[in-house]
Image 1 (cartoon, rainbow, N blue to C red):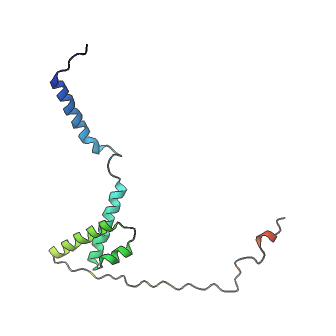
Image 2 (cartoon, rainbow, N blue to C red):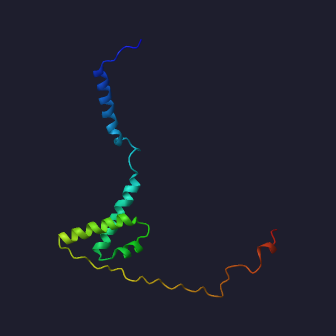
Length: 124
């Protein structure tokens, strides 16, 4: 009824399909999201910068609350190892207490709202 397919043809077909499927990571849209990879690399850079600025991890986490903590720690740890290997001294952070400017009080003689309620206004 059905024609017999030689076993070499089946093997060749299976081998070629495997080869085609190994290149699936090159198809756009099937790989990891580039925004996620970028966010992780930025968090590693933040951690490395914190270590170079002689900041502790807790300070780094506080200053960068949106950065993934695991990646910040990985960057901090990598920079720490690099600085120890190459005998690099850190640079103290210039960022100190940031003083917020005092708000200027609005003068009392400037009226920002009308004295009459909105329901009693004439709309003619």
